Picture 1 (cartoon, helix red, strand yellow):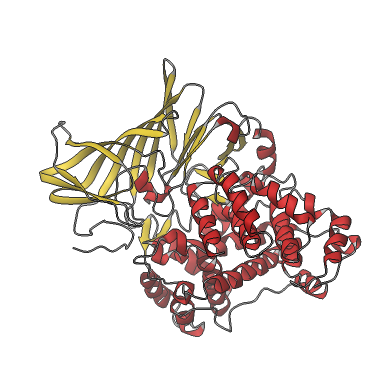
Picture 2: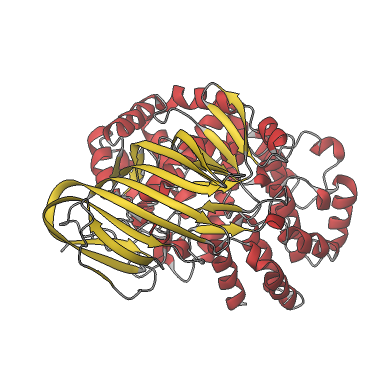
Length: 584
């Protein structure tokens, strides 16, 4: 027996699934999926096969002729869920599991009509990263094993189902409709993604469209109208786009992430819609994942930096190509600040600040932080500096071509880099990035004239003339650098001069609210209360609940707000906020 992924029951000595045929009926009344999935194995085999499940009610398991197969659903374990062990007879290559999901399935969020923009129809969406696909489908839930799939979703006829897959057809049957999809390229299970709701599309370019509730469609289409420019810039850097389409889905406010890189249908938080396209770098990040993560994938959560460090590097190269090196440097400075904050957060668990982690017994959601993103980015930037950009670009293209549609480990990456860029890993002390906590002292540091200007204004109130051309990144850097002991009248001056409490840009607003709350500026409290009822993005919830709960004065308010709004948040976000409140 060999379990190569600490977060999966998958045994590497057992056969692997090649394709899935998944069929599900969406039941908004009971908040369940009534489903069946047919696994086709890469080769016929006999003996036990272990699948990952979480809170699934298994009805039966049958072979292709409908004959029952023996199975055992083990008691649930923390983090992993329940192992479904199926006994395969000699020569079997295909079997079907009939089951239904739980109303509290960790990958699914069921929204009532009042929780949507339109207020008339319910909404359902999935979020399977890192190990939540097992709460939707019984399968080998490890990114080490990639699968192709077909799917059919039966839904209320008034609604639309969309998937991170290629649309085939829609059939209508009385009060219901059935949407059929196919994913022809092999993907890791965490990229299984779908949504059901009142949705409408608008074309953005020959390979892209945006989906949204009709009430948000025009705003979303305008905000994301430059996506084709991003796509062309990315292809010029990383090679051909392998997924045919790059469509976007504007999610409800409860979506816990900025974006999710589901191939063919990236999910995006509505907090990106600012009216000035100032936060579309998140779209660049999710687009970059089309190469780094979706095309070349980490073998398990212990190698997560291979997805995210590479993607941050690629995102900033796209930004540099579109907006210039000054803008890229600003985002690099923001990233370094986020990294320093994450290192401080994990100071009691320094082993989680290495890029190559060891996560047996650790929930990947609890280990999640900016460290694999930003420390991984710094390692790749150091390698680029050491090798020179032309040589590193060639290395990156060979890396993507070599591991295309495959998963790999940190150790495999190191071996590949040693072969392709001899001596570079030693020159940058890659060992310190990969296996030691913290950031090596020689790590790259962003430099630009705009950063120097901001540094000169640290702690001062800028004039309207000085700040008139500031990007959101510059406002964030300025606000986050305000000393904790900043006098409250400084916040009064800033708000009177720049209207920060009413900012439509969520990145700027959260940086402002956190700084103002930390300094005890009372007018920030009311806007924080409202904002925590409007969004579900963890990037905003965690710092705001964190600063409230750290204050003796506002700790009870934090708990009251979570009690009021917690049910609106995604289960992953709820878990994160509960952890913050439990430590207060």
